[in-house]
Image 1 (cartoon, rainbow, N blue to C red):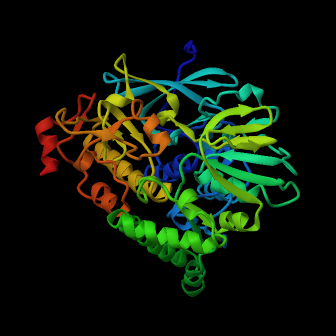
Image 2: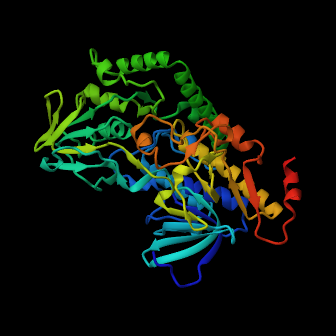
Image 3: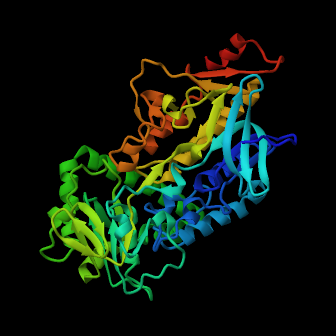
Length: 503
């Protein structure tokens, strides 16, 4: 990438990404540091991240918006599980209400960032419609999500080129695509498939029939779309207090469900099976189509708002086939069992390609950085990479819960550095510490990313998936021996004096 000739703009904090993480981070950071120079760089031409990118039918949250939404902005809609347009509107309101629009630069795709210890600054190269640009910053906060925005995951299917119909990945759904009256096969059994199938059977463009073709079943639970307790709290205590109470209630209820299922997996499996059996037609083969080989919460559970997925199965508009694919044919899919699924459209709801930091090339003092060599500290800093924080939300709870709590830690850390004259901080992991993947799930997308993502360890180096545990990790003492502060200025006090604050 050719460096631009003009003098680069200088910032204190650069936030990469204007999705739900980046917008939330911008609000926390601007509130904490009204005098700092802050900018939000977004590679796409719109804010919203996931909620603007995906266009497939029914795209919605898989968590309740009272916890998926921001702590500082109440969710006002009746629906607790909401579709993408409502979430996107919520994010736009958050930008407007917090006067963040002037900070966001759309169409600024960050390609490379290099840290200089001598200057205590990042040099950040971007591609824009107006050409390549460069800026510098003391800090990078990466709210880039965890998957590739430009490419979904699709395994190789023998005979793909033989199929006469359309093959669509949900991440690249053509806007306005007409599937009315068509036979559709959706390959996959995750949240996307569970969302797509009932949505494709409603409205003027309803498909003739939709078949879920799964290799492995997933745990699916019906869940109320409207949280009646949230409505009661709002009516009794007002909008803001009612939202706070609902949020508190849902955090602990969700945590209780996850912990119970993981502690008593056989009981959890039995309860889920009973709920599934009750939601399906009499005699339905639950043990074939709703009996995963793994325990609950080894992978994320899928929610079906008001049981819409089960209703589609009961009504006959949808069906499930549990089998393996031999090859695509001109008219559909040949299965290992010998059966053939006729299809006019095949939807490959086969997952995401995990990619942290948006695929940005990182370097520290001229040396390229391999993220897989780093270990995550307190869920946000990375060993060996100074002055860089990342936002990785929860995979077993609402993503945004973690973003809020780690943003507070980040702001407290920067305040401490400002107060004592530090301009850089790095964390050092014990080489002897036992590590494991940062996304420690059995899901395919997590397994495929094991060699390209950071590791996690123990104690402060654990990537917690528990909000109460993070309350201890991130709201506890700010400093410990893993942090290494430094300053490039001559005015700084001696390191001995500085370290006295740890006492």
